[in-house]
Image (cartoon, rainbow, N blue to C red; front, side, top):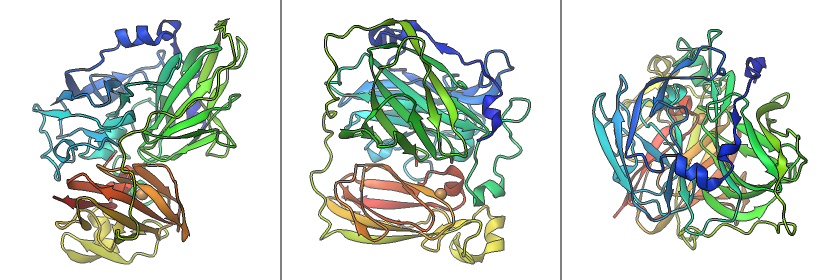
Length: 470
Ligand code: C2O
Ligand code: CU
């Protein structure tokens, strides 16, 4: 992060009119029938600066927050008004395979001018999101993403439910997306495309009004192409209640820091305990110095409470598998290689072995099990109902955020240490040279991608798929 986060100090206030959850719900289009991807502009640098040309869902960055109810059918017509083919992937939803939105695997990309109907019933309540799954590295860098919130049938009692989508943009001095650097091999072989301008819900350092005495649910989503975020809310002891959409036993992280790899989400319960006039920030503390991503602004009014609020209860369980039978699990190794400062000398691509120089010419610099990019045959074929374990070995000098489609998994081993009771996740962060084994019940038939969610790594080879048969 550099000083460019501070180019504009003028945050835009999220006013008191949004204080009532009922009012906010009434005002927002709860279920847009059509989700249109098109060119638009967004005031990323603040209202006083010229707007940034973006690609956006329904003309807004992020796209509209889609709210639906657990177990209710959602119907969305995706209309592609972009100049290139696209799809919509519903990240983290344990969805019917045909609705997963992966171009070339579960559907053909939707050409410009055409549309595709997505119809699905989310089994899990929680914080999810949506984004394209065709040239994702470019389409997301240009602004195509949004949050998908699946409400519990019995939602926890909070005064407000705030969803915050974090994104880092790479902007030039003119405030426009740095297009020349899109597809730059230097990013692809290193950490991925890291931005120089951080936004929360499309605004740099927004001010979020709240009142002493309120209880908030904060939904944080890392929508960056490649940046890992370490977030901490100043002045409050927040309870972590869900990760990647799935409830956990609530606890307060010791140092207050929630680390989110690209694509990961966290739900927090926060009691507003400061005095009117206080301005605590949500800080990003992963870099050399803390960056204010958003500021909570305490209003003069306070909410009177008869008694101190008790610690939050756990969110209601989602219908996840009861048990993972590790003893009889099908095991598959996944060796991650390549990238700058790596040892990879070559890999298979397009059906034959290529040396590093030739691979780079193909835009490939990473490999899974010696192969760069998608293959005809899946990495793993597993019968429905069986537990599978994928033993991931990060033999690279970079962190990676591995995402499995269609299933949530648990990390059952890290660096040779067996773990139990780890949270259900859809994305796991592996540090350089780290090993982690994930286990999941293969209960959702179809073809499911497994890839690094650092989108440049995905595009440059870190992508494969598994098949659940039956
Ligand atoms: Cu967020 Cu393959 O997806
Ligand atoms: Cu990666």
